[in-house]
Length: 421
Ligand code: ATP
Image (cartoon, rainbow, N blue to C red; front, side):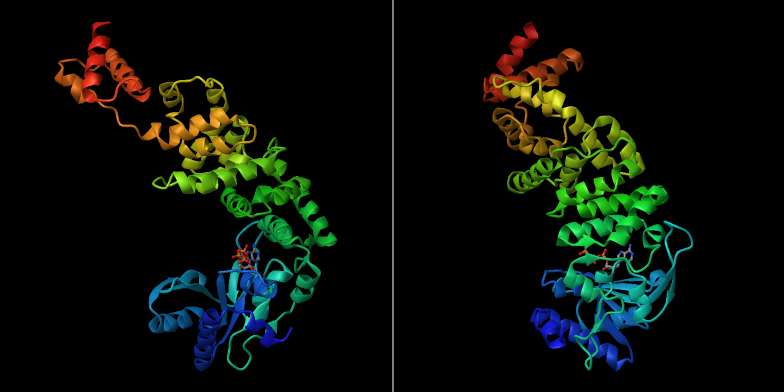
């Protein structure tokens, strides 16, 4: 592909930034390249706001020089030889020195040494991700393609760079399937075989739960998540993470529900911070006993675990509601459930409309109701805190929720009646 054609696809503001990086690298005797997802998606004419720059030489030094020119922030990780520069216009660019990697044992993190751009491309996961584009002025826009990545992009194939790839780094199993689903590509036959072999050898047991969780977190928001999850099932990936973990048969519909719930929450729960990723996890992990084991294996954080466990119980709770349930009953039943589990239930397939309407009413209205009277009011009436006290407060609040009283005065009247009983 001609470099002028590639350059013409880059938005002018981004091109100016890349040119400046290349110019400065050149002045300091370095070679700089855009790499990875950005180049891949440029060639596929898809948007990508991830900027990874590989430098033959001192990447941190280059990032620091650019930081002096541009306003913004810089974050340096000297141990990894990387620097992240965030410009004041929000553009974030990762700088890394070209490196070589060797894997001490399957599934472990690699040993790293500095190397050339070719070394750096050869350590990558797939040929379509092993493309670099030069940024130095004389060669800007020229591709470095030592693994036939361009050919594979054109033929729509996912291909690893060597036979041990999935053994060295089993996260690539997830990545291969994610790219296959996202781009509608095919994992080449030889790599499908390597995947089955690696999984059969138990490589999934060798990586940390956190790394698996991160990969699933990247899959779930993909538009083609249902296709990707089905493909993961074909490779028996879930069963290999935890025996008994089987994604629901109607995952497609549940994934739609997660998306609808996210949209609904954006519109109606503006003041709450809704944990969006949990909506997709609820589509994937639904069986109470499986959740318990998977949450330990994947080191799911407490908040997500709580939401999943609550969601698994919520079905039984909703079964206690009927079209005629009063607002106070809805409040009482739902009040201990996380908003994410409730938002998901609204959109859940086969949720009766009346039930969805009650959950919506709870989330947007009942949940926010403030009691007309509180404990301090009761103490002023010389009542002593205790079970009866709590019951009176609840009964008064329930009357308020059900619209039987509207003012504090009415609340005191009704309270007087409860106290006599
Ligand atoms: P996405 O569009 O999904 O964000 P990306 O290509 O930007 O894709 P990243 O995970 O941000 O993906 O990784 C950036 C680059 O780093 C990849 O393009 C690939 O070249 C390389 N890379 C990432 N993970 C691995 C891995 N496990 N093994 C080898 N190379 C990897």
